[in-house]
Amino acid sequence: MTPERVAGMFTQSDGAFRFARWARPLAPVIFGTDDASLGPLKDGLRVVASLADLSLVEADPEFGSNFMMFFCRDWAELRDVPDMGRMLPDFDGLIGRLEAAGANQYRHFAHEPDGAIRFCVCLLRMDAALAAMPAEDLAQLQAARSLLLWSDTAFRDRSPLAQVPAGTIVAPDVAALIRAGYDRALPDASDDPALAYRLAARAGLLLGDLA
Image (tube, rainbow, N blue to C red; front, top):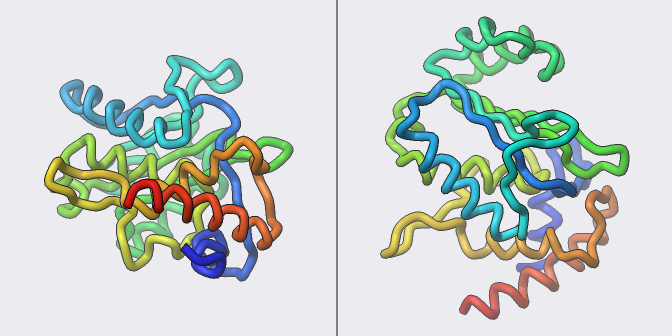
């Protein structure tokens, strides 16, 4: 858990370091799935949110919901969802880019005036890979990727989840970074790469406790 490695987890492909975390409880709402999946999905969100001591609430006072998950079989289906264009900039162009890339997931963040995360939209196209995941694991995956503003390349070559005999968990190094990222002594948002040193120190201690 070196500062350089941590810095890479929050350095975007344009070279800019950007760290942000949530400063309010999560108020999730899930669209496009069956009732039987809602419980496991929310359980998965709750498990990962607990790493950051974030609570799940029924409603956000400003937005109603501030963490929205949309499931679809094809990206084009989302064009029929009311007000999607108001939530996602250049929505039509985005759908075209997702189709061209063969992507199966996308996240969009909105931010507080100080840079903290205030809103997240997760779009999921249920291809074979995502459809094979249990609902709770899928929710853990999305929560792990949404509780911090990770680099757009942070999980290009790996998953933030890990398999253990008891089931699926957030990988220990990712869990340690999430916990470290929500240390109250740290800012809610920063573009200063020096923050990576403070994150690395805290995450390293947490990993040591897990060993």
